[in-house]
Structures are given as structure tokens and as C-alpha cells.
Length: 234
Image (cartoon, rainbow, N blue to C red; front, side, top):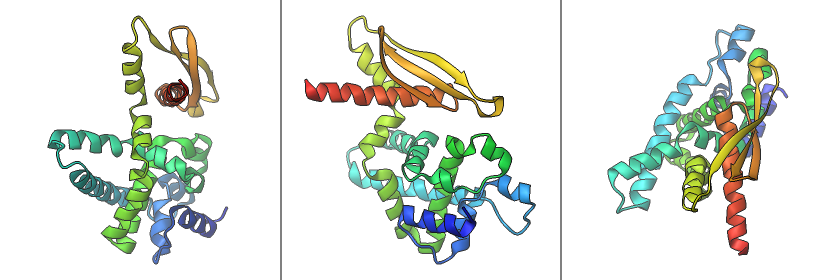
């Protein structure tokens, strides 16, 4: 896929057409791509990510301030932190398949960079920064509202899945929660871990990730969704 096609596809995914296409090109460019091709007049997403992080924090702070008028500053800060953490932003980025359009160097590509939470969450922030420059704060805030604040309950469930599942299991007398590594596969630079989550001796869900923590979180999320479905059927 060439660069122009990547830009067009990302615009379709996010529902916003850039006046300055160079901003979006920069937002989806990883430093490995520039270093590998030795492009001097082409910036990576890092500066836009820095700006996008600030726009995200302000957008979410404003949302929480108006949405929860009785919530304390401490609780709002804690909730905001969970909403802008790496896992939450990566969850949103994967929703729109953002990883498929990142410009990566061959080494980063072969190392599984398209699936790495740290990279795709950074690109998500960079796109927020790019939209802010191109269209202003209100447009950027609308993007955040659509892709981060929409269905916020489900996103919070994913981010806090391990702690929520732990609380549910602890509420059951004598029940125990346990994560087991089922398989470790792939080359050293691009490992994949498959993990199962058990409640007592019952396997509730399995999931894979590029590290054990990521795999455990995904497994916990799947287990929670399964438990919720069973509760609804009961």
C-alpha cells in the first residue's frame, strides 16, 4: 500500500479529511521508517504525539468536569488517567485498524510493531494532535468524543478487566483466579504469548499478546464478557 493510499484509508476510518495531508503523513510515520530510508525532510509522529497527549487530556478533563458534577478532583484525575493510558488508546486504535496504516521500517515491521500497544497508542495521540493543528480544538474534541468517549463503559471494562475480574472472583467464597501461560511462540524479537484465565479449575477464556501482561488483560476481558452473558441468561 503506497503512502497516498494509506492517507486516504486513514481519513475514511476516522471520518475526517485533512486540508494539510502532510500532517496526517507525519502522524502515521514511525521513526524507524525515516531512519531506514534516511529521509531528512520528513518528521516522525513524536512531536504530534506530544501535542495530541495535551489535547486528549484537556478534552477528557472537560468531559469529566461536565459529565460528573459531583465527582471529586481526585476521582476525576484517576478516571482520566485510565482513559488515556496506553491500553485504552491502543484499544481505540485497534477498533479502527490503525496499525495497518503505520509507516514502519522493515525491522520494526518484522518485530510486530503494527500490533505493539506502545506504537499504535502513540499514533492515535499523534492523529489527535494533527487534527488539532488542521481543524482546531473543537474538531479534535469531536474526534476524541467519537473514538474514545463513545461506549466508554466498554472501554473502561477492557482497561480495568483484570482488577474487575479479581473483585468478582473474590466476592465468591473460596474461589480462586489464576492465569496460566499455555504457549510461547515466535522469534525472540517478536514473541507471542498465549494465556488462559481460570476460575478455580474452569478455563474461562484464552488470549494471545506480545507480552504476558497484554495476553492476561485480553483473557480477563473475554472472561468478563462471558460472565456477563451468563448473568444475563440467568
